[in-house]
Amino acid sequence: MTTTLITGANRGLGFEVARQLAALGLSTRDDHVSGLTRPATRYSVELHPLDYEWYFTPDTARMLARQLGSRTDVVCIGTPTVASALAEAHVHMRLIDRNPLVERRFPNIPRHSVRVAAVHDIPIGFDDPDAVIFDAPWYYGDLRYWMLTAQALGRPGALVLFSLFPSGTRPSAPRERTRLLRLARAMGDLTVHHRVLHYETPLFEEHALSAANLRGIGDWRRGDLFELRLGHGPSFRLSLERRIRRLIARRQPGWRTFVVGAQVIKLRMRRTHLLGAAVRSVRGCPNDVLPTVSARDRRRSSIGLWTSRNRVLSVGRPRAVEQFLAALQRGLDPTTALQTVASTGGDLDRASVVHLTRILGIMP
Picture 1 (cartoon, one colour):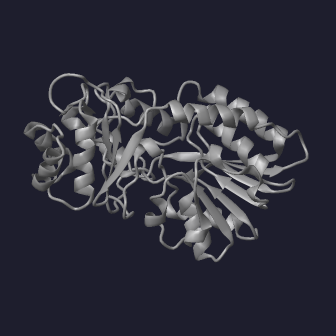
Picture 2 (tube, rainbow, N blue to C red):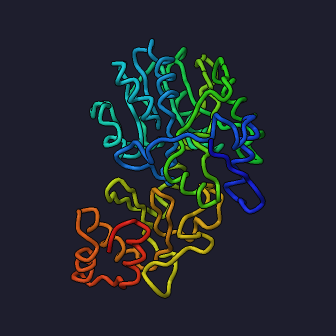
Picture 3 (tube, rainbow, N blue to C red):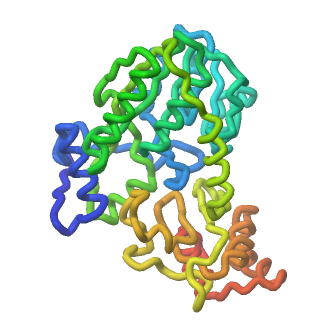
């Protein structure tokens, strides 16, 4: 069995993991979280941290599918593993997910059952399901908004299943949980099942853990399952929040997505440095690996390129890097891709090409 010792040197993600494991009554020496082995990824296209892609383990997805199996009309929001398990069980369902790559990862889900859309773009009147299951990012604002959306979608008596973060997730978690519990109970009858939801550790988090000198953790994330039966209580208005979220989405700096092999690469379409090479390392990221997955980490503002293996770079010439990645995505080798950039007047220096190919694991 692999064991890991968390010491003062493993700051950041190490302390986060230790705190959450302690809250779960586990440790890095526990058989439930250590020594697990599996392929690096079981998906044809890797998961990416900017898409908040933590998926349920296969056992958890099947458990949730069984719980929903008696329902005749299920809407899955951001839960493609559950949708896949329901499809295997021939249960009528619809999957709503903002990432079009789910269609490549889960070919067993019928295309007509997939709607690619952000939560704030779901037409509230498009459906009348008798069950909704969602897995929102583990932040108070997101969870509250997704809960309101599920209430607006479902009819009275509909079953809503969703995941909530444990109390030890971050210092503010207990207070946020109390507020979300209060909201859920105002919507209907609530049952909480503690620590029954298990998450796969995605490849990007494995790399972050390794960079923080933590190995052998396995599938360590746990969530509480909230089982809510919608009642005839107050219906919370969504219109203002939906307008605000659309406005925020428009104002946020855009990221372009590229797929090279199984690897997903996100490129921020603005400069994160002004002078020097087209790309350079981000300070505090040894071997160009961001040693955390926290949305609160200050280094995130310096990241211009981010891979599904948690490797990051600052980017000074996003248009040239965009052309280079687009050429790689089309299957061109790095040398030909560089020639393509040069032929269009793009300014991509050779040192940056070497740096890019190194972090992407591609031979220059």
